[in-house]
Amino acid sequence: MSLLRLAALTKRYAPRDPLALDDLTLDLEKGEILALLGPSGCGKTTTLRLIAGFE
Image (tube, rainbow, N blue to C red; front, side, top):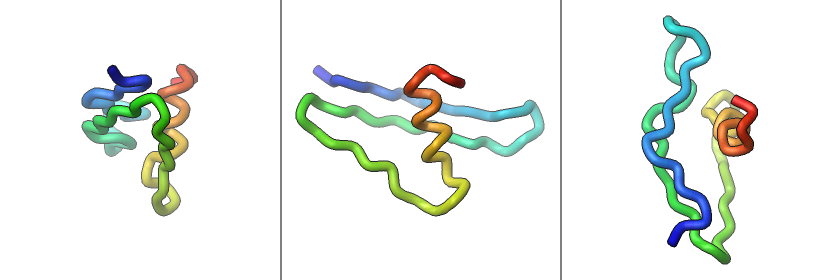
């Protein structure tokens, strides 16, 4: 059983804006460590804000 499961997570800030996240799916099991790595503007902070419930 997953500790955290994201399924087809998609985020767009405004109707005509490009997608900030497009169909992100991941499972995090107990004992696993997750690191979000990538260049500026790739959706790392958006993903964390969605997980935390701020978006």
